[in-house]
Image (cartoon, rainbow, N blue to C red; front, side):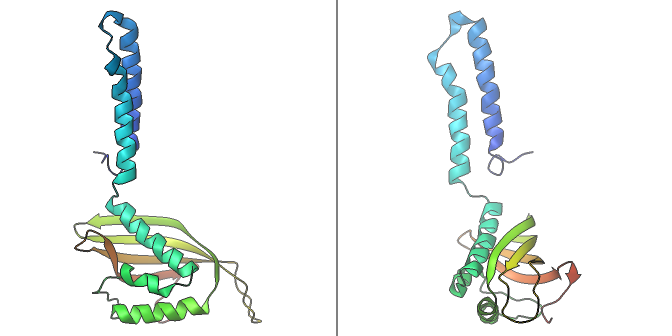
Length: 188
């Protein structure tokens, strides 16, 4: 069953169908016309647009965290990472939130990106945990060294998110899986 909070366009389709039904009924039964009948489809459309605007689903919150990480990387703002990372962060190589923040500061200062674009993402939510897989397309500025740099780099990452007590989502662990379709690990 479709979730109207995840897919509010479903209500817009229903409101359009209702508008057609009300229009047909008004044409056939002109003696039973009421002015408020025509308002029902428009009211449903308003509800759909309100749900889309005011209700943020878990998937939208997780995507917002990923977008915030991308924005912070582009702006070289390592301090913006802190609220996005869970206090109990740990992965195979980086054991704490503070170690990850230190690593992020070092990486951000070494590289300049023209653009970072998410080309694919998949989010699976189970209870208070979300597993995400996504691919980023990185476009770096040419380096000043004699070493040629590729125009685009593709990075495939897995992130695990935890739902926080305030209903927000924070990154609990990361795993870099591929770099330009080649398997990698944090040690490389």
